[in-house]
Length: 346
Image (cartoon, rainbow, N blue to C red):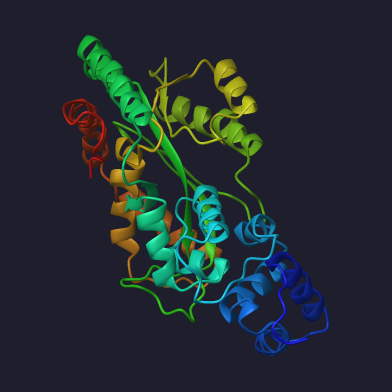
């Protein structure tokens, strides 16, 4: 029956079935459009699903289909205040702070303009360091930023450069096979390459590690990185260093029980970071922008070529540049206190 409604999860199941029958994405999209009309998933989303199924990967697409299980592939005439659309967009942006507005709009089934209106005017979000963060912090968030930054600033006053000398900072990131110079065409698919990036210190890069194919950055894997890769790298490259202070964001992954146990067993102290504060993480305000500038406009054929380019550019970072990115932290802490915690420092 034409014009029916079918949830994204159910549509993905149909795509999985038709793929097993060797049906190409164009024909699948045509068949879904005949049955579901405007309720059908876009051709781009179908291609994403086909690629995920081919690679045996369960990622954001499958998470999205679960969170949209109620059937929310809507027409382009949806009002920006529609509760279902607002909730679905909020869940998408919460599950992946780096998701593009274009992809989020495709998954929810609204126009990019409608998605932009919801994100900006209804949810009150904006882009900071390529992440979606609150446009206006709540009084609690603002007070939390001020208290944490004042604590860190006081500690720096007491310990001075010794605190920065002990600091190791790290973060994870997706790296795509294509690094666009401008907004990419909607017909182009970006393939994510998950990597552990940027465990850096005043005296250089300690570890840049690619997550194996078809593996996920879980709490167990992150614990393995800390215990079996990062700490040995520190002992090998910085033999005289002890009493490490780790600076990473406070995501659920980093706050998992298994990670906390691993850090406790390793004797690693974790420096506090206020929530929604990518402006206080060197990987966000320096490393990733610097790396993006180096590979901007590049196209890579596969994982090997992607990782080779990343490794090459990581090795070009000088110790002076890395030290400068860490020395910027005290000034940023002071500026948060100065501006009453309500301004993201870019």
